[in-house]
Image (cartoon, rainbow, N blue to C red):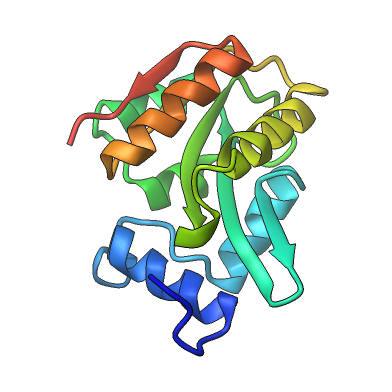
Length: 162
């Protein structure tokens, strides 16, 4: 997607719509103000971004949670939205959900996703006993990125089947 005169912000929103179709799926996290506040209360490292002079070129969302909630999510017992709703603030987190990473096309394959994700994991690990990462894969590129993150973080990666 070349620059079409839209801002980086508008381009990332369009990319999110295209990749996840979250507006038509009530089970996905929508990033409402309430959800953003909850994510920040859970841990300030949950949302990461890389910006240039034209705004964001990459966004990342991770969600630290407990192992029992991770297990319920990967077994399709709860939705992504319920995962966020059920994750309590201030408890020890043992798992991190690699929720989403969006990078504008011209910035891909530069290590931005890996760098932002490892930064988030390191910050969350600094005061939580993280034992695993988990993912709900939406694309081959997302699967590959999650595997690279897991290897670099030296953590097992658990996938939710579609």
